[in-house]
Length: 387
Length: 129
Image (cartoon, rainbow over all chains, first blue to last red; front, side, top):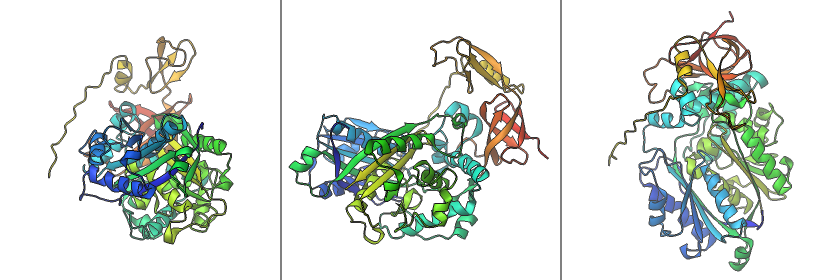
């Protein structure tokens, strides 16, 4: 990166079924917190990058209404989309706008109101998250079905079990119960997960992230701006890698790992000159429980096929070798697509600043990572942050 | 309040792919092969984007393969809500093409599969006892 970029403010709305607000109030909830956190106002903002998939909300072009409500009109010329990695795509755009030297202070805001349509419509929208003609049209794919194809293969090749996957859900719910902003705050047991309704075998209801409403906002600034504003707790972006893969899941050639995520991780490690061993805290994209296991492997926290061992041994719990998703993960914190990637940066920033309360991880070197996957591995972003 | 419903109607072009859709009524699975670089495309493409030519020929794929992975779909999307539960699989054909299909029979990863069509899609019948 040409110029160093840091995070100076973060905000996040409560995630959940938010029928008390439109996408405007929901987004402002996150933006207001990020502005207060950074100690800035709209006047300080050079550029706003909005991220939203918008397919499930009544507002199909939501960026202008959100900007207008938030008094940011005139500074918000773009909305980005990368399916479930939309929030990271907004961060990527914001970071590069600063790194290039074009602007000094950017607000990235991600939001989605996903509960404004019914579940069957939502499944039909997600099922188009591959290739309409060659997959959804002929075979009635759904988003859970896509990830189930990975789960079945991972089980057959590596001996991963449904119980292993359930452990990821148990962990997510445990930590979400301590997070006031999480969507699902109930605790669950392995047995609860195994007995829950089959959605697309081997994926069951409690292997799946919920359909959530939510927003998250991050204020990024150049190093010069951070000095000028006298910010004493910046969190630095050491690297942000990306990857992508085929629209057709059949053409991936393998169904136990996400190439896009591996590519993104390798790029981020190379940019930051870090290795998986340096990472003390990570948010991973656990939209389904199998995705958390694959993430451990794709990020190099475990060897291929051995991701479930980290769960069995509790190595990704608080105090573990690398603590993962202590805010509850997509699985239980919730997964409003446009917000998720930025809520990961929110989480990692809180952790690195040691503002995470009961779920604070202890750091030695203050290095953390975010892993955000779009679609069923169509897009991926991995970022490495430090204090 | 109730928002105004949005009804989207789509007209999807089939031009250039008639052979594929007709094949689905005759137990035939067709891909395309670039006559210049030899790349085999499935799903079929009219253009070879690797060597910038539109000179592709239709190639019929093998009707046998191996089941790579599968899932039993219980929660169905709009458009498939009246279907019985169905199994989506990915099969690797004898020539090494990986394709999506529905699976009939008792699926297991690595099962041998015979590929047929039901008029609308490719269907893999499990041959293992």
